[in-house]
Length: 569
Image (cartoon, rainbow, N blue to C red; front, side, top):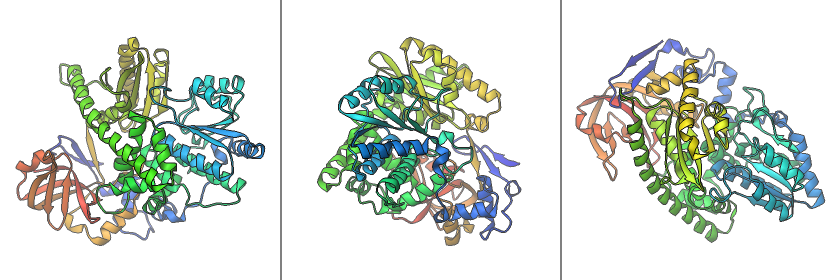
């Protein structure tokens, strides 16, 4: 049972959960609202709640559920004994780069001749490629570890073994195909039972556990704190659920970032906005875009070098280059979004409705930013979105989902139209002949309609632009103690969204716009400062009182303030 209202300034329907929909957890020593928030997030027992509220209590889960765990460790140990060179083939996003960095350092610690390789987006393409694998083998590698790729590369791994004489260890968290590659060992969270603490690891998280095990086996040294900042960056950037081990990784990794000894990361963090504690948003909106910018526009190896480099001057220079590339990425994204929005307006039906799946692109859109464009469109239109560009005569696209739609299942209905495709439910990519793009758009929409007709959880809410609100509370109830308890639910992200509240009749002392384009709204409320991103247009309508949907955040000086999600005047 929920209460709804639809007079918000953004035109969304507010759905406020009733208290009896999420009763408090009996026996939990916390305010009643905390128990309700936990129950809304699927936590309904005292032990589970206590572990959630105290991430330091978490104990590592058994990694044997991750597939060929022992076989993978044994093969790397054998490489160390034989003096064999080991190549690491990563991916060019944050997950692949951090996973590659973790594995590189752990193998170097063991005295192994390690050859990290991050493919170039344009020259090498996505995923494991036979030509690049052949170069690594010709350069002397005898073992190949994949990081964030390889789980669907059946032909490439077969060629790596048969033609190039490589033993292949796959570390990948993406969805497998119907068959698994015939690798020496496959380590993946997809083999863990549903609900297992390791079932939703990112590749960086997977590499963290693997590197810890390698260190214990090969060097007799275990430092659970090492590589945690990289694993946390991977976990946040790849939008995996912050549950189980992922929650512990991010909780501990954010602390590790505060005191990171990596000069490149310190340089990037010095340029961050605000002076409050490092949190999930620091990674998601500041660090991750800069690291991803290297692979999007130039060469992801720059980001890998920045993470591995220990000479401060060199690391700062590399970090500066990432800053420059990220500025360029912003400009290209703004141009691409204008083109994409024009295409969507042209696709509107007679009732003014957009297609179920947005599908935009063109030669003028830089291939490196198609994922960003897809993500922004999915957020703005509350539906799945794919953006594509043309590279060497081939259409290469990237998709981002809205709640309830599984992109891999969309790709599965279109394999006959694709050169290749893969990913996971919320983010996926494809390559195809440009002549198939029209058919792909129709096929994706049919697949999404089938998921919608089947009543997939969350799909209707996403399409209708509903805004789920955890509770209605008077702003006067927000005290220092309340703030402290809300922050104990952090880190926030996928699977553990920041709690959202509704407060009615809030007194407004001052309303003004901020930002270079006056796009944002700054409110001085009864006892609280508030910021509303992209809500500047509402400033002229605000009177002495306002109803606000808000979340708690830390402001520029580290002080708690409200982030306004929507408002009604």
